[in-house]
Length: 357
Image (tube, rainbow, N blue to C red; front, top):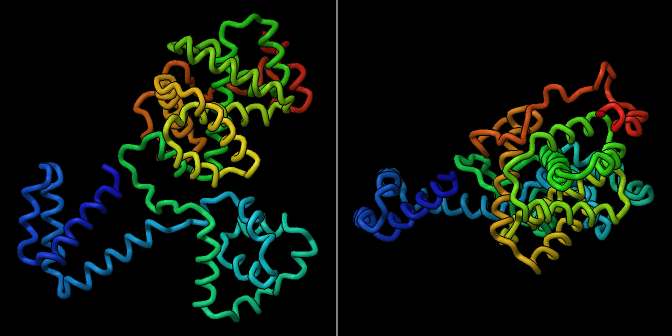
């Protein structure tokens, strides 16, 4: 059970103690067996507190604050630029005080030079009182969706992917793009494969080749959908890197099914161009829902996340997404250069297919 489920039971116990005092335990007979013991412990905890009313009020305040908490560190800094341009230089300077260091550097680098020059110096910003700062920060945070604080998830699901750090999410999306390519290209002729290989650097081409060779257990419907996604992206004439990201985002959109809030939260962690592309893909898929196919995709995505965690390419805690990696996900060993070649260089992109023969 997730940690927020435990907080829910704690809230039930707190409200029971506040409303019924010594009769609060009567609530237990209406609870399922697996929750009764936990709630009973919480009731005892609140009943024995020196000031039960105060303890209950504090808990309610904490939970309410957590529910509306916006972690600015979890939002892509490009979104801040969208909103800061409408603020005065003085307010911008105060908001910048609330940003994490890496986000602050990003914003300062991207702000128009004339606007950046008008921002007050740090000494003046620190002269503003804390209540004023709190109001300004609260007003700024209300422009974003609340994101839960806790990452303590015992049984993570697809809808929890927005907990991934921004850097880890980028890695996952890129890997999903590579997997989507493998699904779409499986069964194609060597000439068609070489066209794609030549667009990738050597390392990605090698990994794509292995994905295609080991791919198994994919439904014909998923195969057709992956080919459609690839043709749709290819029509935009994107470079290799953007193609991988776009195909990965399309795969995520196909898996979202009814997870609309998840898509909105995920968009906050992507740069705006990618976020809007994800939303367009999601809106297009909404017109022709395929719940069975979406469920198959979610299993593939969770297995991919777990594999990346096992390879330490993202935070290792996400190994809990799947107990075993499916057969089509090999390790990263042997993904380096081929036939004694070194790490990929710009020249490798045109020679990938030849080296892979």
